[in-house]
Length: 368
Image (cartoon, rainbow, N blue to C red; front, top):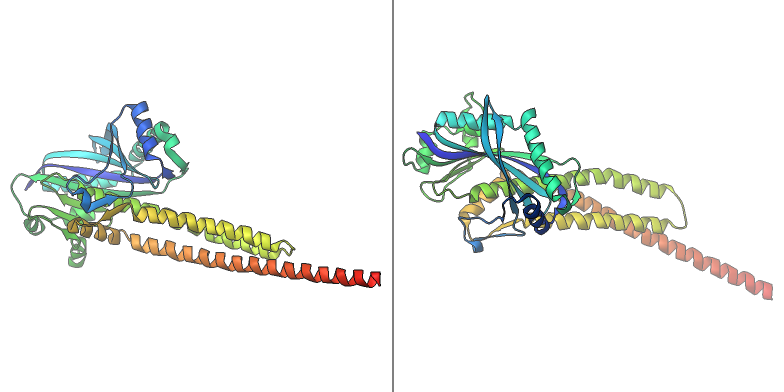
């Protein structure tokens, strides 16, 4: 079969700031660039079935060209901003009247182009343009952002009617999903195709770690949007994980330094350290809660299955568990420091009481 219409979407997500003021970003973007902006919602899903914590903001970045294989192809760029500091830049390559093998090869070439120097300059240029226009909407911007990549190959229509099961039976999806031309083992093929979903008889979503294939005759973007949100949550949890990785040795060094000095004011040093650690725990806990609530799927069972599968495939629960373990270590350290501060304070009070008693005894002896 031939692909009558579709698109290849190359995503690159950046952690650009601690937080993004979406209202300010929308206002500034409209005023300075004159470009289009919209607040995201899932178009094919009832509003009561899903809810965004804060609806992300979509900005149109306009057309440009992308080096894919040996071709310079026109693509359309946009960015979706999430309030927890993620900018998801999408390059959309429209595809029409192309054979399936050529479509699969084009998707693989687009995936490979993500890492090319010339393509990186395009990503950097788009990110720099975004920063130049809405920099004041970035709260505590990140100098060197972490990144995630993802590719979504979407077919909207084939040149003949086809069901989801027929696609799985008749079409070789493995080269597209694996990015490899060599024949894979039966086990590897089975693993690649394991996470496939259909709601109607004529739609299909196959999700893997770094790419997905979607057949959407109704041209709905809900599944693609959910996959992007899952990637954004993964990236943000990675940010917190690395933040805590850097915090733990720093925390240990500060505690060792504080314990290495003997002073009457040790309780004050311990209390300051405890307050700092409590601040870290409170900040990360608040942010992880915001990320967890970025999208709540309630009544749409199909979308909930796709979302849950994507979160598992992207290993978001594993990263979240690592963040929780490190937060628990910091909480325990905070409690220990709090106890040490209280103990040091009690020792200081006891010393003061003993000194006062000694002074009182001396004064009594002098008077008599």
